[in-house]
Image 1 (cartoon, rainbow over the protein chains, first blue to last red):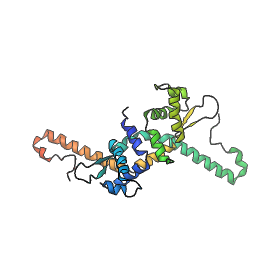
Image 2: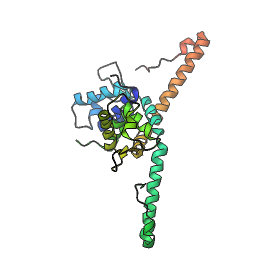
Image 3: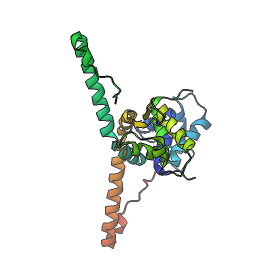
Image 4: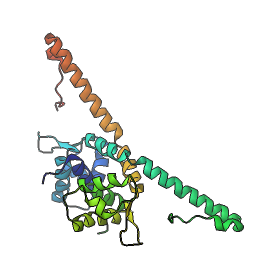
Length: 125
Length: 125
């Protein structure tokens, strides 16, 4: 089964080493040796991560010379953000509810008589 | 190795069936049978996807009753967007450059004499 681009992008981002590599590349093109430095990993292990990033289009590698520096290509992240933004309303509402709940808890702690007004976090039916 | 929350979130989103399930849940709590309907999949296969989504905190399942409807919990997506937003400048610059390049191509197609001014997409050196 050929994975769709969005699945490839999310899958590539689902690893802390690959995310650290992308963060490092925001400073500009970097050689594999330099990319491997901060990680306790062999060069072949780093190269494997780079192949995943290259396959999903998040980096390119120069074809010329022996060093073949890597370069960030952030474009696939745009579709990932566009997809996630459809859910913003949901997480914002959820965090607002949590904020209200914590505020009520604080109020009730200051005025214990109002304790019965604390709503439970889970809505009962 | 215990995966970090961001890796769990990206990993859960790296599957079109799981993304379709999350999209369906934006309309409200839904039973597993209803969630399975649009997919050519067995209930155990759908249940496996739901366990992944539940494990990373993108859904919750009611503990009461036999139906145990699923509910969207979008909060983990916030951290995913926050992480991706650090790269916005990079993909926007990249798309701007592509736009400029296409504009130049159009101009040169309309005025062939200017053809020599078309920059190649890849920067040499």
